[in-house]
Image (cartoon, helix red, strand yellow):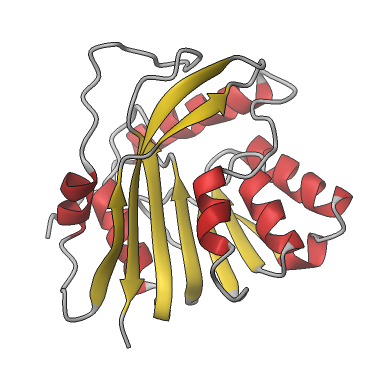
Length: 216
């Protein structure tokens, strides 16, 4: 396992970047839930969910509407404020708790039946595998960790680079280094779907999906 030394200067830079990204626009995302999360959650009994990098709360609010008790985490205060506001507007403020974390340094307390990491990617140094491994350890027996990453370039992405290399689902799963006696891979896939960008653009995109279930 890699041991990461937390760099507070890098964390401050990341926090400023994400806060500026959200505060610089009235709305960054469309507010709809990520489809692969919805597809996964539809097969589960609602319980406690953790949304890593919740953004403006589209996933967290959708989960809460469908009966989940959600802890929504982000590093940007504006993102968390919008999540809380959207939860109140949807009538589920009592089922969505927002927490600010630099996940390289701190992690929400408790255990969860579902941990969602939707496009949990950053241009800054982050011990991502360590964070996701910690998330896997926070699952209840039978709980699911769902990781969905970009598997192709989105034409509207702020960091679009045609030469970007996208890790395979197997790469991501292997980086977690989970004991097969305690966790099993439920899905490793690269589905293609029609996606809509923040300004209404559409394109066929590939996602990279890793779903891991805790045994017990």
